[in-house]
Amino acid sequence: GENVEQHPSTLSVQEGDSAVIKCTYSDSASNYFPWYKQELGKGPQLIIDIRSNVGEKKDQRIAVTLNKTAKHFSLHITETQPEDSAVYFCAASPGGTYKYIFGTGTRLKVLA
Amino acid sequence: ETGVTQSPTHLIKTRGQQVTLRCSSQSGHNTVSWYQQALGQGPQFIFQYYREEENGRGNFPPRFSGLQFPNYSSELNVNALELDDSALYLCASSLERDGYTFGSGTRLTVV
Picture 1 (cartoon, rainbow over the protein chains, first blue to last red):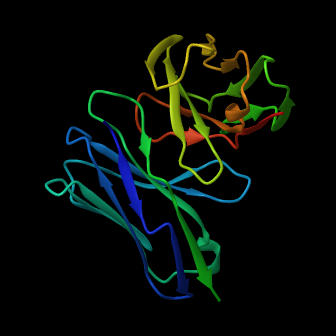
Picture 2: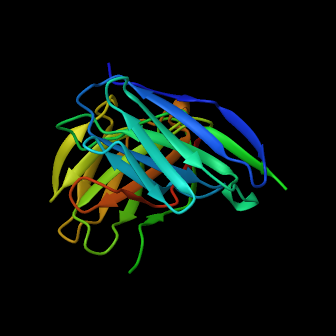
Picture 3: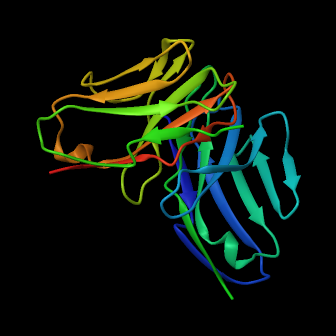
């Protein structure tokens, strides 16, 4: 069935260091991959997304890479700041559907 | 531009009761999706509405039902509540398929 695995479940980094979160999806027809940041008591907020015809996308300190052959995609945050602390979710949208399959989340802690 | 608003923010219901959750879409968005997020988990897709028609459904029983209105706002109804229905219910709107904007959710507790 459709599944997205996300690692690690928790990640602690020093302020200024980089953080990397990795996801693997099962449905090879998936063609849209958003990343969401969820702060306590709030709904998920879209931070970056990538489509299957692109291998990499960058937006300031945030970048996402996609390897369609391996069915892997990753979120990279550089120069982390305390306000980056939150739970991050990856998602994949199976081809021909409008739904998102979410990973189980990564709790990122940026230590000042 | 207003975002996605959900009401109520918190709700406590007794097992067996029925509940209705409401969502106002972001201006200009024609698609509404509902997700259930259990504590410590990622959101799980319940169903989606596009121009007032159900446009896909996840692995949830028929006691989960919904509506989308002409102004693209939406309701999620859950009948015969069970303890396992306790979760954060998220509404997300979008224009067509991509780039959902989520609301802050309704925290439902079933006792």
